[in-house]
Length: 97
Length: 233
Image 1 (tube, rainbow over the protein chains, first blue to last red):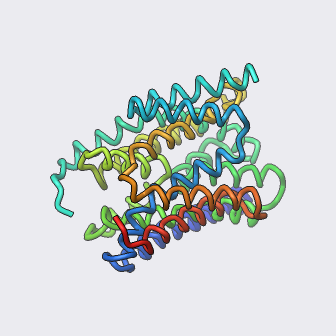
Image 2 (image 1 turned 135 degrees about the vertical axis):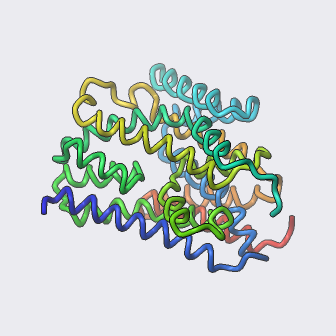
């Protein structure tokens, strides 16, 4: 079997196992108390961590664009507007810095 | 939680529509991935099969990169799977949406859980719209269609396109997640867990010799544990 097929089959199987594993884990853990608070907080915590990982690896251009995007998000609460503000700022900052 | 729920078809179309700005970014990355897939010896058919069965863009990119660099199939699989471990936490946090559903809907739901649609669903709900399972399915259906179309097209045409970084499109997802995080803000009770998550992930990236995707998962987990342990709010 060619290498490409092995990679696709392996990655597809591994990724699906992770996805269904998360469901089985979530379904089995308690629905109240500390566990429930942790699960409720999980999305925001994961996205905070994601942004931290991106920004600490980024340059000044990404930091400036991140700040402008944050201002746009807080002012407009609008996804496309925030994305356009961020892309435009990062493009300018990379060009001029 | 008792909530007013929308009819599934309406939720589906809302999700499909709301994800559109992110789908543009996904299309550009898809084209770039198609070029990489071609370099890794994959044709249109294989690229389409990979998009449909894996449906996790960043892991497909890293696996194809390892193949191109000659690291071998096992190394490519391990790199992609390691990157996807964060999805475990995402599908775990989908438990309310998946509870009580038939098996095929659970299988479809977990397969359709990806960074953008999962985050968008939580953010839309935090804004007060009663959306859930079918919203996620709608958003991911849009992304899957765009991802497969773009990656398959990219196999032959990506070399005529500019590099995503040179036009700032790599920042599209960062900006989107900033908007999504602002919408997710539930009040001061989240402040400490969010700061703790970000600080843990950031410090791990800078100081520990681990993959950034592991730093991300550990940071998210650290904040969630803090939220679970502290009793206020």
